[in-house]
Image (cartoon, rainbow, N blue to C red):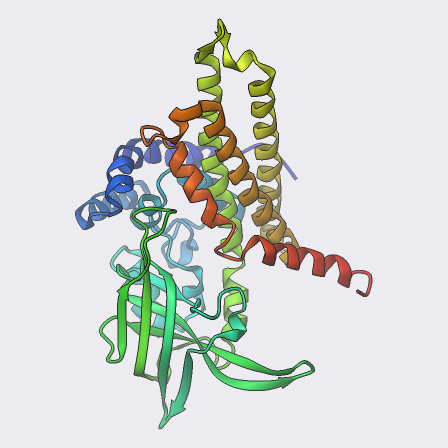
Length: 387
């Protein structure tokens, strides 16, 4: 493995960082204080992102994306992660890579418009009673006269209010396993405006202000068979095949936020004076900085190694779980210590630290909780010795 960046990678890092600092940072206070992302602002920044070649950069070149390898994509995500999440996710959108699993006709209807910035997608798995345990979902799809009829509720569905369609996972049957019956899952495309499909406001979230979540309700929502994504009853396999890298994406954005918090802490420690000297000269502060930098470096190496292995075809679920676990736990630590170094000022919204601190909390929950990551890691260790 080569640890230096190529000329192309450095250019992408520099371009993305400049875009974040010049186009996203100036709007953070507005979004954080209002909790709202204006549609006009979305369109304005989106147009600039498209012009800069940063929009839908996660997609392969043959479908109109930037064609970045996984490692370079994570470097790009790290830079975007420095900014308010609503701004960077909505205005510099990355369509869900699960769209690549669609048929040619589905790509025309859903994938390509998302890449061009004409449509947004949202992904609907979580339910009030089924979070980490997706097999426990109760929302169902029943085949009837050649169509599928969907019923049930999904919640915590990110930016569904803006989305033009949802990729929805539904329990579509049962199968016998050695451990008893297990639900089969099927994925569907559901367009806004489909009869029986309702999107309503979700919950106010302490993390990622401006980045909304919604509740999706399905009441005898009827879909033709061509709205199935992937194979019938194979939705879980579709999700596992296409969504694994999202854990690395979470890890990469955590790196960007942690680096921003650390930079603020270092600068403050070098300037703030108490008892006749810079506070950075006190061991109680300097050691905090050392620990923050060390934890950040360790997390970065784990995330980037997993990305490199993803490109080599050797990455494991354990690699991705370790990277996500380390990066999200690290961000919580760094954000908290950065605030401690700043004292009372760290909690004021004049600085981004209180936002980074709040935002850090959700990272240990979504895309698989820290407990789920630990389960994946420990299971891999035990299986290796027959446990």
